[in-house]
Amino acid sequence: MSEQPPSSDSDDFDDLVEAETTRDPDLAVIEAGSRTLRAQAGPPGADEAVPARPADPEVDRALREVEQELATRWGETKLEPSVTRIAALMDVLGEPQRAYPSIHITGTNGKTSTARMIEALLGAFDLRTGRYTSPHVQSITERISLDGAPVGHERFIETYQDIKPYVEMVDSSQEYRLSFFEVLTGMAYAAFADAPVDVAVVEVGMGGSWDATNVIDGDVAVVTPIDLDHTDRLGTTHAEIAGEKAGIIKQGATVILSQQPVDAAQVMLKKAVEVDATVAREGMEFGVVSREVAVGGQLLTLRGLGGEYEEIFLPLYGAHQAHNAAVALAAVEAFFGVGAQEARTLDVDRIRHAFASVVSPGRLEVVRRSPTVVLDAAHNPAGGRAAAEGISEAFGFSRLVGVVGTSGDKDVRGLLEAFEPIFAEVVVTQNSSHRAMDADELAAIAVEVFGDERVVVEPRLPDALEAAITLAEEEDEFAGAGVLVTGSVITVGEARLLLGKG
Image 1 (tube, rainbow, N blue to C red):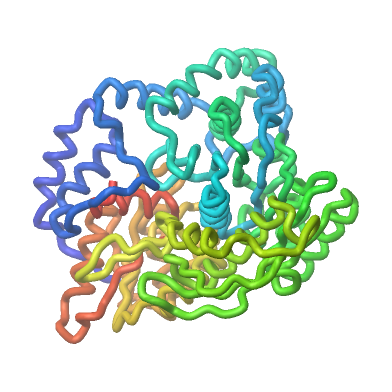
Image 2 (tube, rainbow, N blue to C red):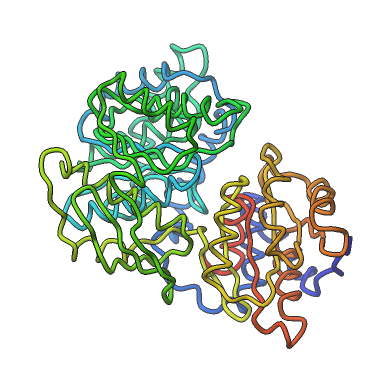
């Protein structure tokens, strides 16, 4: 197992971190690191999908206060499986989640990308949208979007301040205080009602039945591929996990079901029968007719509930994103009544325009060239396999170096095994989260999967990125080498900042 020498920029890096005495320590490290690498990354460019920190110092201070108050609550990994508290909050807020129709999305992988596609499609038909997704890549404000863009910092702060008295009222009446995720869910539903939106696109946080988002009754319930993740909370089989996720299927809804393991599909179909829901299945009622790799993405022909849609350009990589696109299209068709009330296709030009506009930060996202650095938030074996297949198909790398930082509560070995066939070397590291797996502990597993000679250890993410870029550049014959940063949404978010995308 090899160890890289200390970075020549390490003294400057430490000085920059030391100077950031008034800032959050983790953020100071990230932002200081971004200065050391930004010159290599080129101009950062605008990225509405991932907002930067507020430029106004007063707004930045107010946002930090909100973030700090939210941080005192139970985090997203500490749960008391119940919708009692969020239902109480909705009650005192006047049931804002009833003010608009909604599309509710569950599954193991692909939820956020699918939500972004649905949002884009609805917007193309002149509907005002609200989108609630999690976790965020860089900024907490990413989680709540209006009209296809994250809410502004000031609006996020105002929404929190508006509901704070009601949150405190519920806190005082419950055995446990509202969690971080529950408060954010309340904020999203309140913001959507206040906008007001024509339709909300809501991603489940975890599971379905007892997830905080499940106080809505989605007109359309979307189930992306189910796999084994969060097994300590959701179950150890596909069927058990599907049983939890099926909780979002409500009376009379339409269910858009992606391709699933047989036992998971059986559970979903049984629940649909129980609540008299209509089901559309990928591969039966809708699906991907054809796909081919194109510059900057892929060209698709999709079969929707009302017919075929040809020449759809999707600026995302991988077969999994094509399947997400088919699911998103079917969900929007179902929302408009296509396939149920009428047999027709939606305006194909609007569909093409919407898909061509889709962005999904941290999902096989290219953030640098020479060498090419790609980010992907895969954090479980199924996500890892999809990312590995996607990058192999879309990029002609002669050699690929991995940078991997994971959370300690994941199937880390399974994730590493998914990438083993495509990584020439892997640099193991850790992000700033308290949930991050220790780099040495991760390295021990990596050595078992990759062998000693292919593993490099760099506990600090800035050093890990520099080490991987150096490995990708070290020999002329590997001029086509690339770097893939993966393992966690947090790792990807921090790498994005370090590489000048924040």
